Image 1 (cartoon, rainbow, N blue to C red):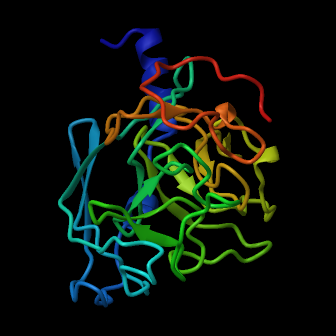
Image 2: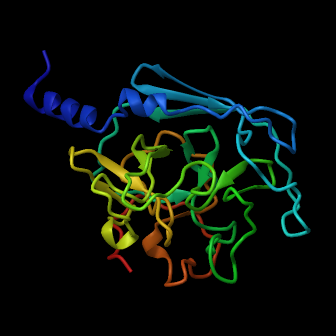
Image 3: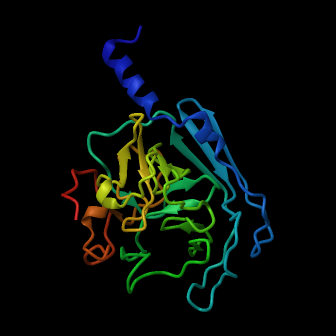
Length: 262
């Protein structure tokens, strides 16, 4: 028999779970990627209390001819992703920091990175901005094609007044949506919490992409079950007004109550 406390916790977890429609949104266009000549694929299936998300990490949309113009020497390479994501996420007592490498996976099987470069500087804007292609992505040294910023050029479109679709899922199990909420409002970080998320009108927590820093996630609101990096771990609230972490670099950090928003 489940006690009252356990039943309440179960109901709270279920309330934040991905819906059948959200699960069904994972898939690719079937377009052949021009650099590798391969076709991207993604699978999602349940295993116990987790979603298993697998993909080959191949873009299903246009890309630059990587390496690009001497600005990014990396090439897209096929991957063997196998991510374990909580099926019943819950809001943690304290948010936790974002590691290097993947922090979530998009509905097309491509990985989502935090907003920083390897030196913990803003990867999207300013003097430290990296080179992205027409679909808002680029490959790293290991050939992982990924997104640092809102992938609204090819993965989805932002239509003012029209609610945005789900973009992907973070490794703590919470869905990531585009910037237009269910009321037709285009959100910025000023409308969201320290992790770039909010509770929607159905009482479900979700992240939102935005055009302003931190672009996708600012921290984990729940407890992640997958982590691909440990050489840096930061909260968006650690950054200065330009989105840079003071001094760059850094080591792993435990969860902590983040300071007030910038």
